[in-house]
Length: 282
Length: 317
Figure 1 (cartoon, chains in turn brown, yellow):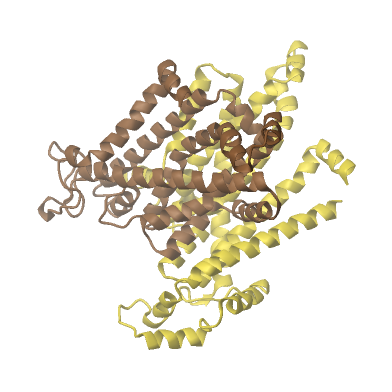
Figure 2: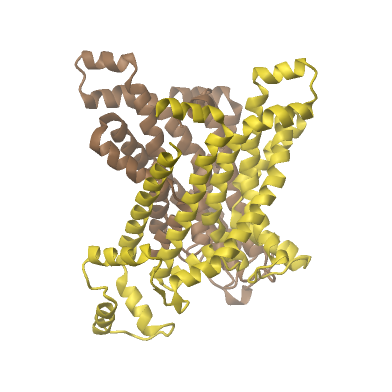
């Protein structure tokens, strides 16, 4: 936490991108005050209006204001990706730590499972899972969770294995520290920064995959506004109303760019040697 | 030794396929009612009673214990029989073999595009590191990583297909002019990633002592690149290339949907929409098998490309 605060003070990249990311979150939270219209109010007489002063991003087939839907869509898109990242981070990391710290049978089981998931294109599993379970935000999140956790499990396991051999862990053992105490007080603080960096730089990529799932119709269902789903809806009117897919797409693009840049700058702040470390551990 | 490593790869692959098929099978078992309903009604919207559903389930053997069903599916699958597709009205395996060439063709074209775009850019970026062209290429590849693939596809479709009319809008037949836009869609994201990796692989070699030595001897940049750097950078690049080839099989689904390309990805999505899980399961198993086959080939080619690995294996075994 201290390094984060000093990072904001000394690294203007990080400060700038943090502000942009917070601005996105703020936009999502205050959508009812920013958006000029309600995202689901249909006015058929206003259908397919091109972008104008009244409707900045035009209107869709039901006459709903596209700008308001993009603003409200930020809520669904951002909340789902943040939930997903937190879930993947906590599930993957805990499994990896358990696996690396305790070893033995439980290690074998977890890592075998991770091997299966990794030797397989994750997105096709996610599509299949989300599709079978039916389209909803929760199912899309669960599907991507099951495809992504092995990466974190493997990374945290290898970090734990490396830390376990250090002298200070041995010293803690000799001093009579319990396993749990050592895990929480000595192992965790040492491996956390790299895992947090990985999670932060994964936000953008996971957002693209979530958007891809909802584009295919396996994410949050209409009429709820969500960027991927909006592009899918706008796809049918590609020729007559291209604005329906241009603006939600730009929204995804901008958001992913901001989060990717933020993740990169966080890496610089938390761990300048991370590139080197990661190469060794993977 | 060679046979031995082949055997261990094979063991791992079988294990993985068993795991995946088991997971997929458990998932499809969650909604057998849907399947039965779909079979009765077809595409019509009629109300079905629970008795009818139970009868169909019994007829298909869906009321048997889970493991018995899985065992019987596995028994047939091993012999190449993945069941019957109700969507396509033909055996699953026939439908898959029908769609496989389209996906392979699309993958081949987009991988070649990726190589043509990413390798020169990555090398240029590494040679000019921290200068203007490097910054430019890195910024573009950064944007390329952050852009949603399906959106790229739609924009290309809108601009080149609809506005300019250069390419057909629907790519439902496999031809050279229909493959360009879907392949380009896939190539955008992949090239962005690959450019970065080519850059870092080449950059790492450029920092080695032998390169400095070659420069000191007055060798030209071209010679250093061609004779010294590329052979050494080949190994990491090959791995990543194989990984992108594998991920294409999955990632292609979105591009195939956008352009209506008749490949495996679109087949999988259609199978989900029709609740045709036999077909879906077959497609997933096939994609997994191809993916693993690619990886095994790459792993085996390592020892040919890098003699050091061969020596190491020898001293261990």
